[in-house]
Every structure is written in C-alpha cells, then in structure tokens.
Length: 131
Image (cartoon, rainbow, N blue to C red):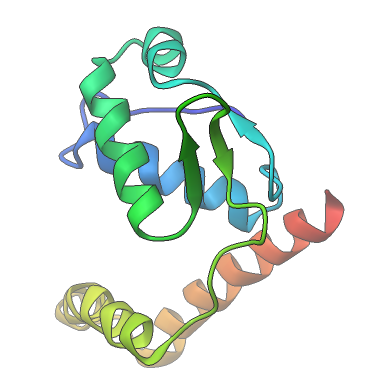
C-alpha cells in the first residue's frame, strides 16, 4: 500500500495517515494479520516525525483497526475490524453532519450527495473484491 500525504493540506498529517490506513483495510490492500511498518520505519519512509506515526497508530489501535505488540510489531487486527455498533453509527452521523451541511450550502441536492457516497462505496468494494 502506498501512503500519499499532502503536506499542504489543512488536515493534520496524523489524520491523513489514519484515513489512508483505514482506506487500505477497507479496500483489501491491507489484510487481517498483515504486518505494518514499525513507527520508526514508517516515519522515516514518509518523512514525518515518529510521534506523528505513533499518534496515528495509537488511535487506530483504540478504534480496533490494528494491534500493537512490543515484540511482534504492528499488525492489522487478525480477526478483522469490529462491526458497526449503535455508538459507531452515532459517531458516523456526527462526522457526516458538516459534510451534508456544506453540500446543502453549496446547493448540492440530496441525490447528488447520495450519488457521490454511492460511487465511493462502489469504488471501495470493487477494489476490495479485486484483491
């Protein structure tokens, strides 16, 4: 999996890294049980501070995407990511609110918004099935 960071983005680097790792898992580019680079190695490879990578890894661990072992290193959670819960759906709704609000302010209708979501979902699933 190729990590591509935008150092000019308003989005913090650690969040970009989190999003790209989750995207890699969603698309099947990163499989359950697969090793991820060490904090030090990934930081060196992508040219960021190791604390940035560590922060990303810690949040991914908290959210159930990865496991961190002192001796074995970092791996994608072998049993897979936990299923959506009521709490997750509430969190998702909270994250979508600003996107929907902005879309409405920009006069994007509901169907156009849903089409964007649907197209992205299909893209992820197609890539996942291709792996």
